[in-house]
Image (tube, rainbow, N blue to C red; front, side, top):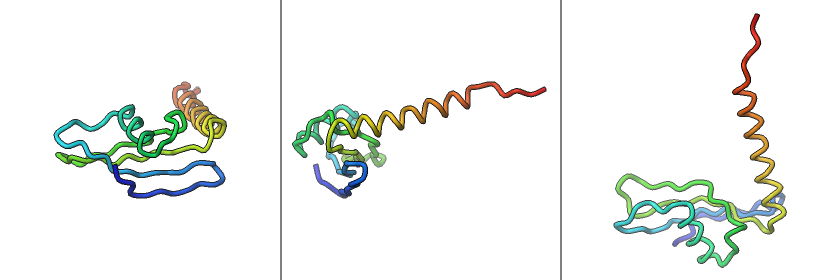
Length: 101
């Protein structure tokens, strides 16, 4: 595993990490597999990591993983719960029938 980019967001109490995961002659790793590798490599509790995306080039033997690593559980819950609430609100609005006369 090789770290490609690492940025710090002080206000959100998290780091955004982009790593390259090698998987020769294997399928693209799942989010759970990538989470385990990332937590082992960075020596961080897996509960504080959220995998955002996994990208693999066609026929490639490596994948790019983008993840957010939070400083503590409270900031993770505050930010992730806020995002979930916004998503649910947006879905409800889209599913509501429009009133036409």
